[in-house]
Amino acid sequence: MRLGAKKTLSQQQLALKLRLEPQSSSGWLSWEHRRLLIHATKTALAAALCWWLAMRFGLHDGYWGAISAIIVLQSNFGSTIGASRDRLLGTLIGAAFGFSFSLFGTLPWNYLLAVLAAVTVCGLLGFRSSSRLAGVTITIVMLVGQGGSHWTVALDRVSEVILGILVALAVSTLVFPDRARLRLRDGLAQEFLVLGAFFEAILQGFRGKPAENLAAAREDALAVLRSNNQLLEAARNEPSGGPGWREGLGMLAQFGRSIYDALVALEFAVQDTHQDVYAQQLEPALGRLALDIHSGFHHVAGCVHHWRFHVPPPGVNLEEDIAQLEARMAEVRHTGAQFAQAEILRAYAVQLHMKQIARLLRASRVETSRAVGEAEK
Image 1 (tube, helix red, strand yellow):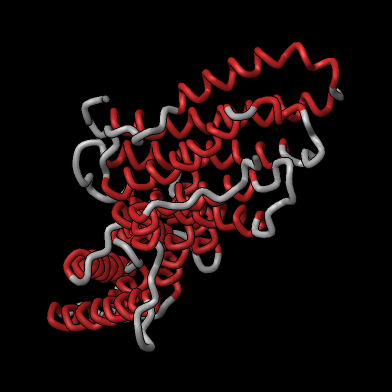
Image 2: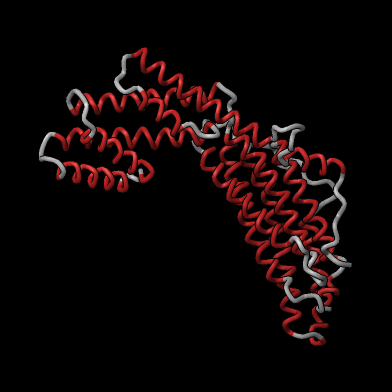
């Protein structure tokens, strides 16, 4: 029996996979094109609305507010909050330093010192993303020739940026709202499906020919992990969506990274095993564990998608599978003298990494269930 043999998905698992993957719509407008069009529409609306409000309020150079709205409006609400925070802090710090250093010294020395001080302060306070914006604000306040004092320029600059940020946040919240935490939830569900495909591709090379899609499966898993890490940072900026949401999302992302590391270790362990015989003695326990791990990936993906974790996978008991594998290993240990040491070590490494993956899978469901406040089963 080859452990990498594909296990036929149930209709429910297949339907889940199709729902999670971006679907191409009929006609010219695809799923990704719709998102791009929505974002472009929101950006244009925020910029135009900000310019109109600036004119209504009598702000000088109202285009700075429109520029701020364009810059901070991101594809989801959490990213918009993060960009708004960075821009507001940079503008406030830059305006304060620009006005303060304009009161003494002469150009260019006071300007040089203002930029140096602002960037240093931003770095020391942990606002590195705001340091460039602080430098831009200092440049406008001290170097751009305008009618009025430096104080007036600084105040106008802050007012316009605040207006742009408020408009961007309002548009992001009210017009086709896109929450990072909801996108992350579906992204994490997709992540467990992709990790399951990576696991299947790895095991196709165990005592057989390596899967042709192994490299692609590894790259897909890494790409999903990176995308979800970005969404996690954005989701942390959003108000909580309910009990345990933030903790649950962070925990699932951490388990996903740990499982990926374990899968990479398993990939190295199965190399050069096509002629190994010792591992065959671990059947059927090793094969049963592999199939239940495969089912476990799909079950956890469904749990994430529906945000329900307390129900264990039907017909799957990973801890029992591990116990049976360990018992089988104890039974065949006395035969080790008949095999090469390298072959025995590879078999032990394979079963060790598979047990780790199984325990991480179970823990990802159980620990997240506790984090979101569900009753444990």
